[in-house]
Image 1: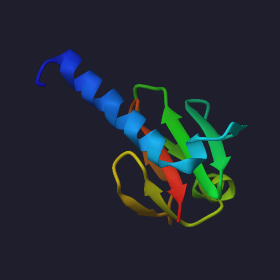
Image 2: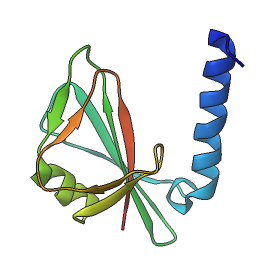
Image 3: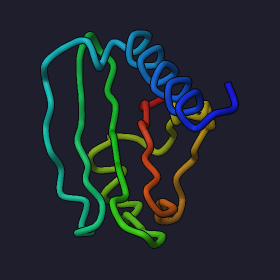
Amino acid sequence: MRSLEGRIFGSMRRLLEVRKRCEAFAGNEMDVVDTGNPHVFGFVRRHAGDRVLALANFSEGMQKVSANAVRLYGLGYSFTDLITGDEIALKDDLRLDSYRFVWLLVR
């Protein structure tokens, strides 16, 4: 699917598949968190021992979330981005490109 509609559909389907596989999204426990950045919305989801920290940049420019805030709400130093599959060992501030979001599973 090369059309814009096809790419959007494919991306949405992939997000739904990721949500289905992660127990944290199954429950109804959610807490909105203070990211320390007015352009970045964050929340934590927990269920059945899984914990996901979701962060979304709602601006046109790159934004940072302090490493301390991510560690505080994510309760860890090492994460897996559920969307990309990348392993993230947080040493510095987390940088989010424009309109990017991450779902960080604590490892």
